Each structure stands twice: as C-alpha cells, then as structure tokens.
Length: 115
Image (cartoon, rainbow, N blue to C red; front, side):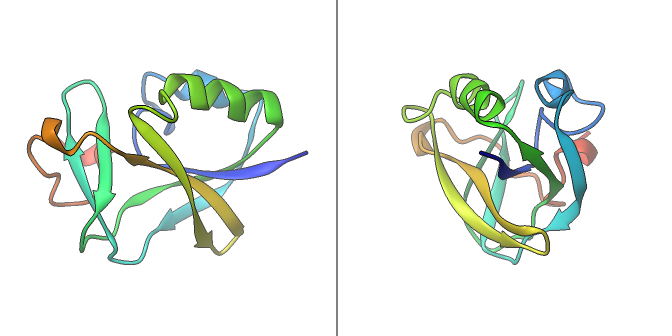
C-alpha cells in the first residue's frame, strides 16, 4: 500500500537523509497552513504546533519506506505521525514530542534556509 509523507527537514532534496526517499516519487512542494513552528535542534529540526507555515516536499512512499522513516524519526518516542491535508491528498507529517529539548525557532519555516 502506498502512502504520502510531507517532509520538512533532513529528508528533503539535498539534505543528509534524502537517500531514504531515493525510491519514492516526489509529488511536489507544499507550504503548510500557519499551524506549526519549526525548531533547529542542531543536526535536524523539530516541528511542533505553532503559528508558522512550514515549507517542504510531499512524497509517495511504500510501506517499507514508511517503516524506515518511522525508525529514523524514532516513532513513537521522539516523534509521532499525524496527518495533514495537502494538494496531493492526506499525508503523514512527523511531529516532535520532546518539547523540553526545543532550541531556536527557524523563523522562515524552511529548514533548507536555516543558515
């Protein structure tokens, strides 16, 4: 079964974990409604509820890829999966759960433009 996933950090094109999606189809780019906040945790971002729009990419993934992403994102410990409505259909989004570790917010809502 195929699923959609919205990625906003290290899984995006040009980022260090994009190889996890090498067999997946990029459906397109998407900017979320202003319902989130993106934080810089050093090597990766943490997305929580807030008032920002977040920029990312939507991919069509198979069950094996989704399972690998869950391991990478440490679901259900560090992140949890929720759904978000995108122009391509309902997609999974990874929500950060360790609020005590939050660092600086990425004001642009774009992990690739954090520096």
